[in-house]
Length: 95
Image (tube, rainbow, N blue to C red):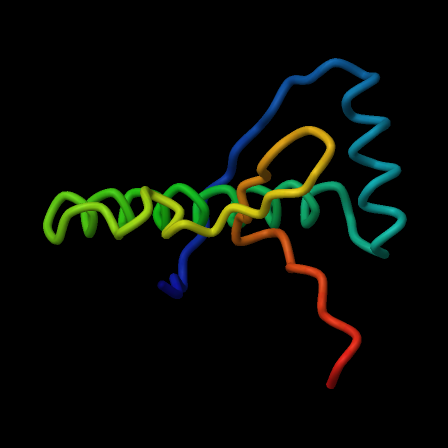
C-alpha cells in the first residue's frame, strides 16, 4: 500500500539503544530514521502474514502434519528444528 502522505512520529529512547541503532544503520549506509522505518515495515509485514496464515488455517483447517506442514528436521543434537520463513534449508551436494 503506497501512500502519498506521511506522518511524523517522535520517539524517546535510551541513549544506548540509539547508539546501537545508529551502528546498525551505519553498517547498511542508512540513517537511523530509515533503519527504524524499515524495521517497522518488516515487522508489520510479518504480523500481517501471520494473521493471514491464522485466518487461512481457521478457514481450511491446519495442514497435515501440524501447523508447519510437517517441516521439521530431525537429527539435530537439540532435537527437531522448525523451519521458518527466515531460514533456508541446507542444500545437498548435488545440483
